[in-house]
Length: 271
Image (cartoon, rainbow, N blue to C red; front, side, top):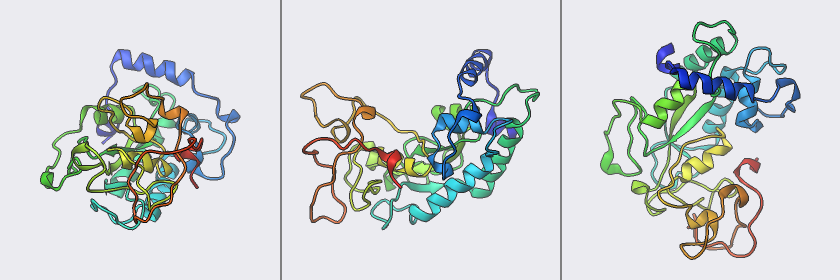
């Protein structure tokens, strides 16, 4: 189980991990948040370590995130409007994740572990876009044509996340074959009757639950994020956030082009 969770980093990765760990903020200097889900990933990486003043554990983080997913996600395996945010289409078995979180806590609190220091992402939950394989789960890439496509191994990016100690929660919804928003939708984190747009929409919305997820950018930042098509240089997501909502009669509105100034808020600001 330990090897499946954490893997064996090579010498180069081990050296890089030491560099990243040295750059983490000091736990005593991190402001206490009202909710666990409000901590940034770098803050969690620091607080989960041995000697953290807030006594935060990977098990606590997992339980909090799982509770939030259970509360807001709605029914799984729904490639359509499930009545809630529908960020995750399938989840890993909770008891398996709980065991992995407890193993992560053991490593995080054992400074003389023979494997060396716990890697930077140890004990931190991640969602994975439905186009990437998670061993033991179906991977449909947003289409029922791939029903029964059980993954025999992890995709490379998933395997690398596991090697860094990440907890793989499950698959986030994506548009069919990761092409556009036709066919199935997640709910916009600011307003669930609207879609967030893009093929990796579930990965964008699930940041309100797990704060981090994988996605893909096949060639460009789509115009739901950058406000343009091929006509001008694209801005970055970090500099934009989410645009203001528009009035429209559809129950779950398409992305469309935003109009007026961009709203400086982002998914992380959602309640």
